[in-house]
Image (tube, rainbow, N blue to C red; front, side):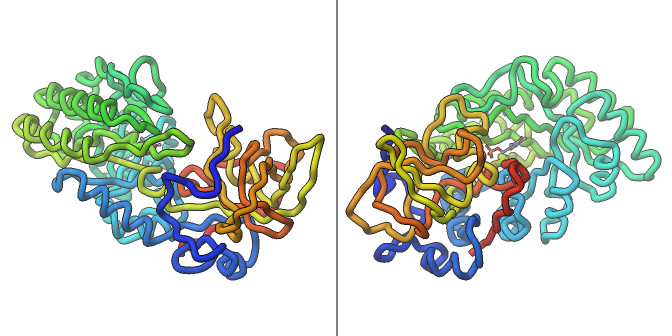
Length: 411
Ligand SMILES: *Cc1c(COP(=O)(O)O)cnc(C)c1O
């Protein structure tokens, strides 16, 4: 049993009005009419704005905050984020296209990811985007393309540090990794950047994702700043940009406490004072995905059927893992836990029922809620999955079983 009902202790993003969940000032039922179909994702513009304001208040004022687009690349969301963030971090040429359609200047955009195709590299060089180099081979490709294009690429070195981000949902640094260049090999790479006469920008050190422990993040940030300071005498030119990663998590499950960002901000402020001498010309950057957008989004499906099997009640809805793999528990989770769920047009209903909420796919993996106690729901009601603004639609196998697509709206 894993009941979270009927109110969610850690959710204050969306208001309620009578039985209706409110999204951007509109009742959910009316929004569903406006969208014209279920399932859909809805992202709340005000919630995105408020989130960034709160974060900036907690962080040192000189810190630059970048948005990692892969968390939610919906063009309208990215347009809005362009007004809030200091830069974008991208992971493909198609993300770059969406980013360059916004007012964000190319000089505040960086491109990371192992396995960038030659075509993607030349596009990024031509655009003037900073390329985070992830291997010696990639650096040679960039050098050749710069010769062909007659352009001097902006490059930073993505470092695979010797340390790990402790207590992280997903580790992306430390040990043997496909990401970045091992700390030990960085001096040789720096020398080669100098020989190739590329525009050296600085370093990118990304150690992991979905972390709710302030102490672990503080430790990783300190080690990242220290590592960059140690490497700075070997750099071809002063470090101008130092991206110390992110990893700020959001609470998904009962018992998850929100990350203490004030603690992180205070520690970072005092660390920046200490490192200012060795990194005098560097912009210090953090890059965040889910922390900026995750809580501002919901996934909405409609109940198609209600049935009882051997004493358990099943609500069958018109969306599922093909749109929201993470909520089904199949996006890297070890143990399946329920995302926070509500019946979005029955918020105030007192009569409760324990149900399983399942999608329409012919696979037992298509579960959105397992034995949750929720207001009693009927066919036609709207099921809402919270914490769905990041790694939702584009992180799901939408072609699986040839179901209709979901819509996405920014309200
Ligand atoms: C995925 C990724 C991010 C964003 O991670 P979140 O957990 O969404 O904050 C940031 N930087 C890099 C390099 C990434 O690969």
